[in-house]
Image (cartoon, rainbow, N blue to C red; front, side, top):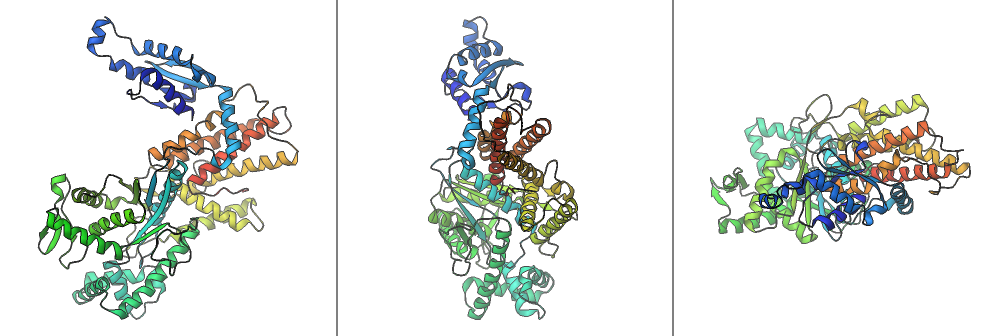
Length: 584
């Protein structure tokens, strides 16, 4: 908002070719915005110009010149003053009129406040979650789901058309292992497909018994070539159970039901949480044809009965794309997925949210795409770390997996006990509010970290009603609603006509929300939203504690300010995929 306007006015003075920054200072005492443009211009003075002028202008002199020019153009309408700090930084202070204009905009636009046109006319596919059928939905999938859904909302808020996509491994050795267990281990039941026990049993057989390993490999081949109708019928039945189970989890995670543009699963999944659904059973066939053509062109080569891509020439490593059994690998399926995505939805950007463990494999896949002449430039891999409980690391192979529902249940029950002890929540809406706060605690604890870092879920910090937690931000939102309710009961109306002399609290933070939304996209990181909400919530709480809102001459203004804070917190939480309870 103001950041973009300041930058535009500076560009008019110094020229479009100068690359400089306009940022929000870490210390609020240094103004609302700060620019390094004078320092950048000083470094551009070449020796010839310096010799001609005998002495080039130093950054402070340049800053003084820019300051005078800026204060004589339209920027002066909403900039109170410009200071020169340090070696030549320009610090901008937004006027009362400027801050009031932001409050007015927030009150007028409500849920649209903060939206930008940064990505107008852009089409984006964002692929995330990707749990494999025949395995559990574990807490690692919560990472991908929370990050992906939040980034999807941030990108939409910046003006793009977004399609949420999910890509699932419905074929491969993991499926063959589970299918072997379901058809060979007597005590196996359908529930064991959902809790991962079938896969664990099949993996144990594969690793410890040569005869059973061969049987599993044969099942894998039959599933690929469709030669065993009885096996395929059983497979279809189990795949449906598995995907329906995932759908139940998506609902728990607060995802919205969407109208499908493309899916080959709609014949049995009534609720669609993704716009686009892709399966390895389809991408493998497409990818294999791409690799075979690439083999003829010399992009790939044969090695010991397999087809490989020599990544060393690109600073990477060699990867197998078709194995010695003639089956496509993950890399080949990635090629097929890229083509299928483009066929189903022409897009400008394709984000892929996965765990760090496939980072190197993905680099090879992208290098192969470039060599094949595919447009790999629009594909960006966003890898995330691991989510762990204090008990340690997970492994689906050994069954040491923590289901997403387990974490959900643990968080909800601990919150229930806290609320029961405090007596804050009761009545018919108790369960609904508990679900909102549970989801808020989990998602916030994931999104507050940088995307690539590992996370150990801290129950104490994540559930706290104060400090750096989802429930705290939700609590502050509920507090704003309590104030607004009391104001309404007192017959107060909102007005910006009688503001106080000084505006140094929430107002100074509210003006930055539109910029924060753009920053979050530019950095592909939701924790930028979280840090902002923490600051805004803290500022409002400080304001609430020291300032009487109802029954003072400025009440109408304070109520309007509270409403603006309420709007921004709700919009910010929505960008994180977190609900805003009206009361807590």
